[in-house]
Length: 152
Image 1: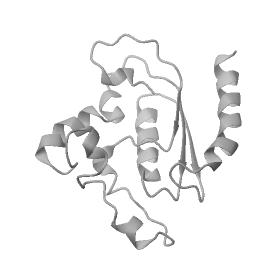
Image 2 (image 1 turned 90 degrees about the horizontal axis):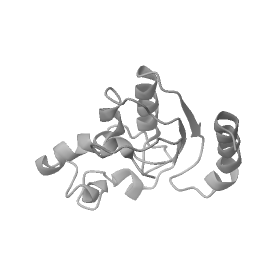
Image 3 (image 1 turned 30 degrees about the horizontal axis):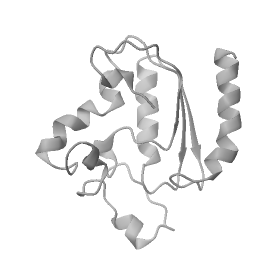
Image 4 (image 1 turned 135 degrees about the horizontal axis):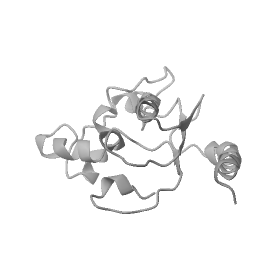
């Protein structure tokens, strides 16, 4: 997925965005976690602030000063207030995802709504991060919605 809002001066025709279990606000991934009771101890202990976390994309652990500025730059929500146009978003997230908290997806959908954007958010009970059931349960409805909205 390309993110034209993250590239200053980029002039790209925005297309719909289909996002299954993707991170949005890396800074709040730990604070938004609401782990189900069936998680294993190692899943509960996993943190998004460690050296092997998503922070490696930004140059270090998420809780370090060197990465703090980049966290805002990597967050879609930071660009919403000044965006001239935004794509239509289809978002699917499992409520049993130990990697990306579904609460952060709700926060991003709420932020999109604040600026007048419509996003289709589907929180799916029992689905985990990268769950193979996304392919079988989400592909057809997502494509049907896109065709209904945009044709072809």
